Amino acid sequence: MENRLRLLYSLQQVDSGLDDLREMKGDLPHLVEELKEEIKAKEDARKNSEIFIKESVVKRDSLDVEILALKQNIEKYKSQQFQVKTNRQYDALSREIDTAQEKIIKLEKEMEILEGKVEMAKQDLVAMGPELESLNKDLRDKEAELELVNKEHEEEDLRLNHEREKLVVRLDKGDLRTYERIRQAKDGKAVVPVRRNACGGCYKRVPPQTVLELRKNSRVITCEYCGRVLVSDEIVNSATPA
Image (cartoon, rainbow, N blue to C red; front, side, top):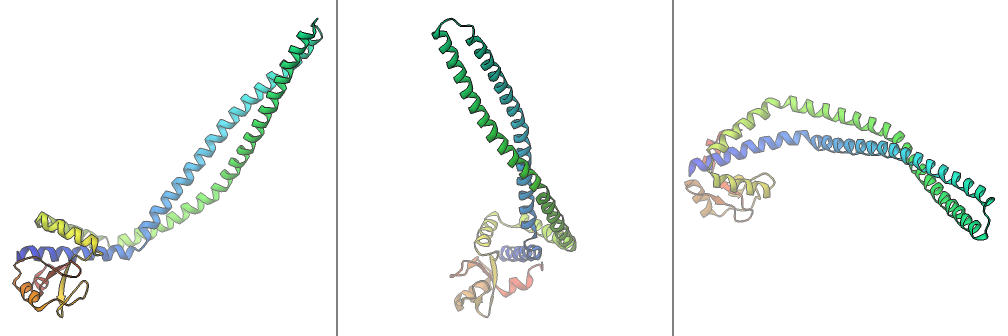
């Protein structure tokens, strides 16, 4: 059991060291990811606008052809009106002319709306250029900062991760699950020493009987207030430093 406790405390030291390295990076990793997502969204929007403009031009040309065909039909119907011999035939041609003119008005309105949307899409494309340029510059700057921080602490990061892998392999699976659960719930601190008869995590007083039990290193003891695993000075002093 003593070895299990020593392994748990050593793992906590290593993880605390890794947490400190992550803290040195601050919000940089998060900012880099946010910028990448924003740039992707802008680029997707730009592609969608370009596709919309192309499709709209094709549709506008199709509407234009349809309007031209309707106007030709109207001219044809008007010329036929001079050749008909009955009022019924004349009225029928008039209805065809009215229908064609109504459709022309509808199609011209549709073209007008479409051209308005195309113009807005073009304006959006123009605005996206400088926005993307600015975002990409910010991303390059943040990535350079993050790379510098990573480079400064690369050796330490590799050492701690290698040490963590060695400890995890040696740990009891149940102990590791308990450790990870407590660590997640308690802001990274799962295993803590007792200092001046107080829990090193929540600083609440540890009963004298519990302190005596801790010195035996015979079982896993948790703080009755915060639930963290408590370890004795002997474990602390003998654990592998991070």
